[in-house]
Structures are given as C-alpha cells and as structure tokens.
Image (cartoon, rainbow, N blue to C red):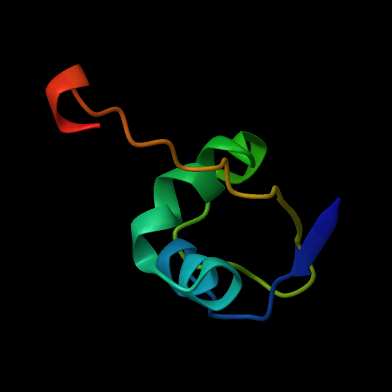
Length: 65
C-alpha cells in the first residue's frame, strides 16, 4: 500500500493529479480516505492512503466485440 504525506495547501484534486495523473480520480481518492473529508485544503503531514486504481473494463455489447 502506498501513502501520500500532505503539504500545507494541498487539495484533493491536486493530490489526485499528482498520484493518479488526473483530477478525474479525486472521488476515488476521497472514497479511500473518508476520515479526512473535513479538509478542503490540507495542513501538512496528513498521511493519505493511495490505493491502486481498479483495472478498467470496457463492457461492450456482443455485437461490438
């Protein structure tokens, strides 16, 4: 399991971009660190859990596969 140690001023979307490469994963990051949802802007030294992204599966209809 990986961790991210916040710096003063970090935000959820900034951290998602840093660790996952896109702000689109902000909700995923928040879901895995619910005890810290009280923060919009983080203070320093909060240890967030960085879960691996689930493998994406594309569900195509039978006629497209």
